[in-house]
Length: 515
Image: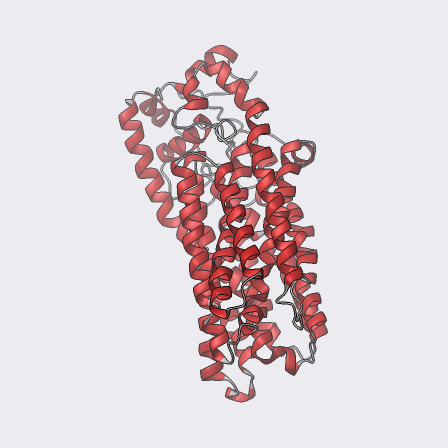
């Protein structure tokens, strides 16, 4: 890619009327029209120096920048997501550890407790992501985390299942902004060809939280059950909630903001960070795109791509509600006591391998649809065979494969959204949140798929899960066809304006064209 990539576009179209530009052809007066947090200045001297570098020198500078961002952004969001899922999913460990008995919580009550979380989770995602485009992620995301950590501690004081339900409602409202917010932040720093690997590392926290959740629950129940008059399941909420609050305070000093507003980057590095995203056709938050919330919402709601991804994500997340029933499913296979908690860990270990394997392969091959299709088919096949197997060990192994494939499919859909709707950044933020919100609505009815007292090896739950994943497999093929036939308009225009086939087919090829 030539160093003067933006010059062709500037020569063809010229800068916007009245807009000041620097030596790199980037508008300086509009870098933060959409933010209450001022963008840091970009130096003309740095821009001119950058234009004078050879492609090899620019590549080396970019590599150093990406490594620098990797060392701060990915570990920060990983540890935050780890505790997000621990605080969200420890309800399953607590239920099997005695919470259901102590609070007279029936299987139906437990399903209601799971359901109410997703009601506020779905409703609050889009508003939260719209707020995120206007504020500092380094403050906003940790603030959300600190509040949900405090709510988690409050679970230990509950004396009825109704109180647990109310706390789950509040927890859903607060956690709603985190997952889509992190995806938006990652897609504001990384190019399409870099995003899947980073998102896979981030999303691996889901599987690791499942492993640790079982091990932590088992350890706390053994060591603290009855300590200071508290049941073991109450200590589970206290310990994990307190750790969440501590991590939230620590990440304030590590988590970056957006490329144009991050203070620990030099002006030259901010220029490189912004230009590499522009070159890849990705909108940069707080960096030159003047799109109102209303317009961004309208753009996202009227784009057929958004709704195609909503349907796909509903299927994968609806299937992923199985995570809340894994302890009960393991228990139904003959495991008892503390062994139930420990035997959930290998299932999540398989999920971790699947997430990393599928997402890394997707980035390396620059392909999304076939990976999503393959993961979906593996899940369907595993659960289908499982229904015909009576041997408990065989059922456990097939459960590992099926859950792993479901876990691999979910991040592939999220990444696909960012690739298919790259800009403007405000539209991407709304689309990501909308897909995540409506997709998670499937978890509302998914909460009733695996009743505790089922006597048919949960055939209904697995049948519905297989149906979800069959639809996801079909949508992967539909998206592949449609995104190739009807590519994102702005990408086509940019490609034609710049006259660079490499933009579509080269190293930074859009995934719409190689779906």
